[in-house]
Length: 337
Ligand SMILES: [Zn+2]
Ligand SMILES: [Zn+2]
Image 1 (tube, rainbow, N blue to C red):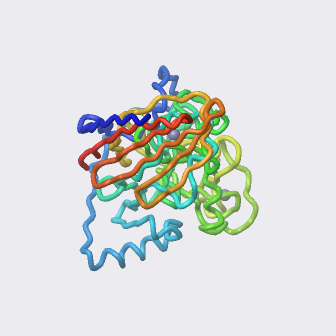
Image 2 (cartoon, rainbow, N blue to C red):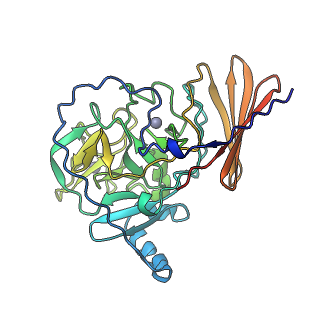
Image 3 (cartoon, rainbow, N blue to C red):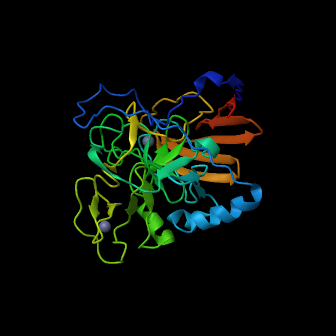
């Protein structure tokens, strides 16, 4: 039986204007001992480069950061105070496989470019009042990996360890309500690409996150509760670890926080409405058929199901197949940028 349900949905009203990984309704707000008055958000600095010099500038800037190792996917440029990182948030490695607590979100390339790029302060400053990710920053990203994939709090928005809850794939990632792929733990696998002595990521306060090796190649030294420490020159940096807090356990440097989210950071424009949890589903395969066509496979109650989705122009079409061969389809028009 072939069931085709075409639902062309204009999602003009769905732009969330935030990057929350709100996989479930947010919990009651917990005590936030670090909450401080929120300073006004600095107005965004817009940088323009002519096409002729953009490539040169991009190359020069990227060479100073680990993003250069992913130059085919990640572009950077800077002005006096800010490093801008542009990507589509999609990694080169496989995704989704191994997730056993799934909300039916899938990876869709995001538009983290132009005024929606990631931003890092070029001169990170130690904050008078650091912010612990144990009790805050449950919304949005807290770091950006060298491959252009955002990193969220290691705790989900119910305060649980997302990795131990089975929500993450074998690379430490999954997708948010905007079908935006992101990590919740340190992408230590990037060490092999960027080199052991280069950062695998940067916290949004601008301080680097190394893997399990010091920048000089020596073994990792003792860490504070934020997974960081000062080097011999008095510079602060974080490390990724295989146990909590996995990544930066908060922000030791100055950031602006608004509604529990670091700002500025890119906003998500979802293609489809948020999906629901699918208890019992285990994702067993995910592959990219072509640049804009994907197939995710999962098992549930012993049966195999697939989700195929393809972008054609400004429309995404999803085809859901169940074990009996029933196929349903849904199409969504992409929201305007
Ligand atoms: Zn998430
Ligand atoms: Zn260190």
